[in-house]
Image (tube, rainbow, N blue to C red; front, side, top):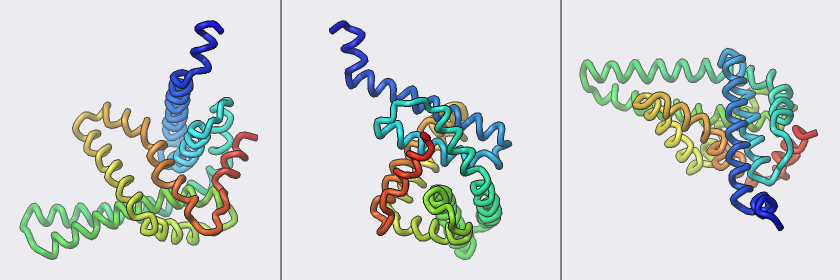
Length: 223
């Protein structure tokens, strides 16, 4: 067996191949977000990149662009509805968070401090619920958006530790973006789908009667 054959059959080749496939996946997500003017593309991009990352980590070796396109096309409409709803929710929460933060800069009060903490926590909870709702919409396509949103919040508290890990990661990326913008963007773009897959999608196996719905959804994007 020649060197090339040994290399292509080695674990090193497998990991390098996975690495580049994940990079391509996240580049596709960035392109989708940009051409979708952020608002119209971000939800579908998160869904597509997370499921494609799942497939790559679970030994899928086929082309990635077609799978990504299928996932975006199927989930675009619902993801826009979910994004619209959570944009309103998060905008209100962030506004209130900044209001209490600015009031604390003028004068410290316990009411302002408690309000700031509660609004900050509610913002992170809602951001987690947004990701959960997007993923649930792929597994329960017939469910109404408000039912998906409710279950998104339920799962945020149900997977409390996973939600904390994801929130800390997101907060770290945000801090890195503010400190070194280009590095923060690169880290966020490359790792976001991986972290969502590990923290959220893999945890769904523990949901009663889930019955590997995510596997069926992922397989449907290949066809």
